[in-house]
Image 1: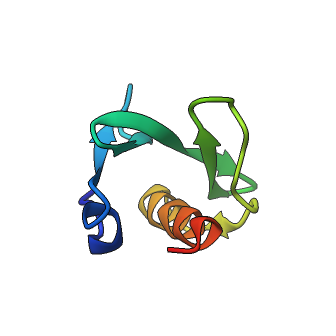
Image 2: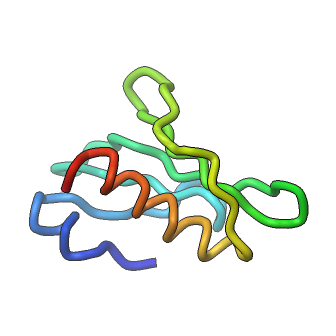
Length: 83
C-alpha cells in the first residue's frame, strides 16, 4: 500500500504494522493513526484508531476485500480530518 498524495504533502506516510492487515499512518515519522482491516459478516471493515488515545474514527463501513477496507479506512480518515 502506498501513501496518497494528500498524506505525503503533509509529511505523512504509511508503514506496515504487525501483519498485512494493520497499517500505521505516521506524521513526521510518528504513528498517529492505526488502520486495522477486520472481518465483518463475510466482508471487511477498517478500524481507524487514533494512537494517542485509542479513539476510533471510522464509521463501520463494510468493504469486499481486506485491501479495499484499508484503502476505504484511509479515505474515511481523510474525510474525518477534512483533508
